[in-house]
Amino acid sequence: MEFVRHTVEINGCKLGFARGGKGAPLVYLHGTDGLSEWPVLLDTLAQGFDVIAPDHPGFGGSEAPAWLDDVSDLAYCYLDAIEALGLSGVHIVGQSLGGWIGLEMAVRSRERLRSLTLISAAGIHVKGVTKADIFIIDPEELARLAYADAKLGEDAAARASTDKYQDIAILNRIASARFGWQPRFFNPRLERWLHRVKIPTHIIWGDGDRIIPPAYAEAFHRLIPGSTLTMIPNAGHLPHVERAEAVAQAIASFLRN
Picture (cartoon, rainbow, N blue to C red):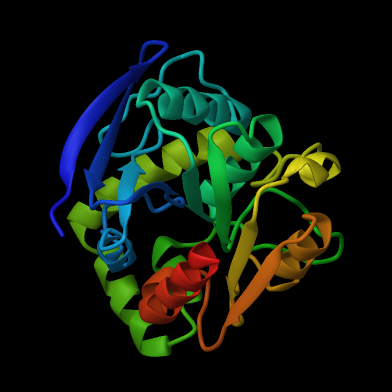
């Protein structure tokens, strides 16, 4: 499926995005790795949806203006982008950092949103359950931690050691730190407002996630009224990469209903 690059300006922020496919609009919000490695999941989803995959401000082809301080600003930026693009009935699919952004969007305005899919989402803290600190872990070790399959982890670690990937990873870490440094990848106030997520919500998690443990999936399921939980076996923090077919099937089944 061919994706075409576009840019939309939101309050002085030039937001770059790739768009491809036909059908109901689906906005994919990436995690801390950005879109430097294109998820094949998006090609699959584009067979039935109009897929829009932006680079978060500071990542890839998007600028990070001085006024953009935290994830709540990102949420408003994307709500404005959806309006600027004339979209309605939008399905949001967010992974890790992207899932957190999607949650912050949904508690603020549901007007143009149809559903929310969270894949290994950040955004809350579960007392007594430690998340991996991506800012202090060596990038190669972090790549290994992201996968349940040791072979896939070693392959990812090898890619992380290349000069080209290191340059991209440094930029992604800087942008990630801007939004998730303190407190580490959660908003202490978000949990109290999750009852406002009153659109169909699907929580997808790898049962072997060593970065944001599965206990967080159970917490989101408990806190978001009427949510659906799908655990992906033999998958780590990147189930949409490691078990792309299973995740695509789970998303398609949920959205059909």
